[in-house]
Length: 118
Image (tube, rainbow, N blue to C red; front, side, top):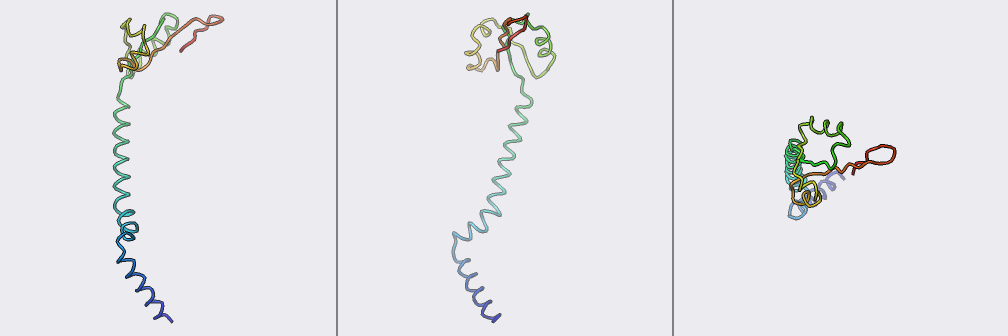
């Protein structure tokens, strides 16, 4: 009985080894290709994260006198750089699309003396 099992096992093993597509999907793909692919994606993601963490965001503020504490807080943070070019402030969306600014804060006086930020 045990001999019959070994004969069937050997026959099935021979058929699997002959089929190249099965070998690729059983051995090559999980053992070689997937770890290489995972390592490449991990390396790329860490490079992107490192590059973006050191980036300085350029910004402009419309009506900065309305919120001097906000202006001071942004000025104290080294990851932000104020851009005082009036032409960029006037057309903020075009400056963002053009890559000259990362964001524009528009401050307006709201109800009850509150400052609204857009």
